[in-house]
Length: 342
Length: 285
Image (tube, rainbow over all chains, first blue to last red; front, top):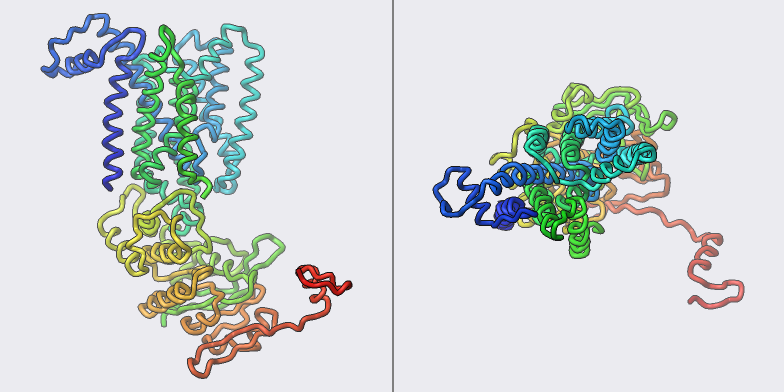
């Protein structure tokens, strides 16, 4: 690892600590960084900061509201950024993101269906489950439409993704037409993506698939490097391209679907984080993938926390924050390094 | 010499109607440095791709070390034949080291990472093709000659007995062109089999041990360079009058196409292009 990459790793590690502390302390119920640090040390049984007072109420907020929300935020951000990295490498296209293979539109159809049927009011897991099934189904349809004799040509896949996305968008719209206002409100919350009211249940729901997905992706980093050189080069060095494409597509679909299910649809993370990290650590996925995972988690946590303190007594949804913070920075990067045109 | 590639009655067509290669029969011996020559569209790249197993063939069989090409797994094939494409378009800024490391891919199980042995091999390959000092630079920032040497290092890192190179010298300057041929001659002298699609006939004459002249998917000639680079064969192969002479001093081939007479129709075209209003007897711009 070069000095440059070590520096990036160090900065990311520091940012993880900072954003976790920020996320635990930010919100309507004000807590200082020192209190957060003290609470954390007390939880671990460390004999430091023992003189800092934390009320029972504060402790409850930290334990049952802020902690799960923070973990969910980091997981979702990491999952989305990891999937984005995989898809960009897979398609050798720096503009691919998890939305491109139909995951988001599929999840939205599932979620809207759950709202329409009213099952989300019966069980809190119903909507995520519907969304997950919708997302996976959409990806399978997209891949099915694109594959010919065991091959998945990139351009056909991207076009299938667009077509499936349009169709699913139409289905969503059709269901929205017949929805009442209350249900529409719920739909709106879903589409902008939020980490509000995320509990330990959500952490448990997401942690399995997301860690599994990320684990497989990290194992596949070397293969992704080969795929990103283009199909012909990958074949020349003996890679069964179709098989690896399918595995990586399904893994990133699962990871994205899980993320979308527990947080609603959050844009930009899967697109800009891999892009930013590629500019910082280079395109080798051995470094790019871990960097994107950590940066994705940090970015989403930061957006969420900032959204909580920006306007008094109100929360700005994290999906809005990612777009507001992501777009200008992305444009700045594009102007600074016009790598896309080369 | 041991036969490493045996091509029997091979017919290849991209589409059902159109045939690219017709009933080809030949064999390549270990240590041969074969230059495939012929005009554009003669089927040179197609032949190379078919022998590598990239293109299915309609008829016949291709044996690699006495085994049918299609019976090898992708990984096994990549450990027998390394293939240098005509063009490599990169989307991302991979470094020279990343690219050359890709050559080690077929030697790893799917879960294995690269080790010290791989580092040792790729460093040797980069040193040999003289790109080690640019190992950490992005390939897209390199010149054409540097790029080709990087790609050559990559195919060498595959440590295959056979090398297929599709126009490796295209677009390179005089020195780099010849350097590529020198590398290949050195490698074939050490037992590697090199099959190269080539347009630089004078270099092919000096470095290749054998030339195969293709015309419309048929082998028109297949022999030592001196026997293939003749007026008759080249003119027939390229479909235009070609002269091949030997430089008395160097013994190198001097190959050129015969100049066609300037017809009146062509003169009129030139007038239009240059902008002379010839009917009024005007002057060139």
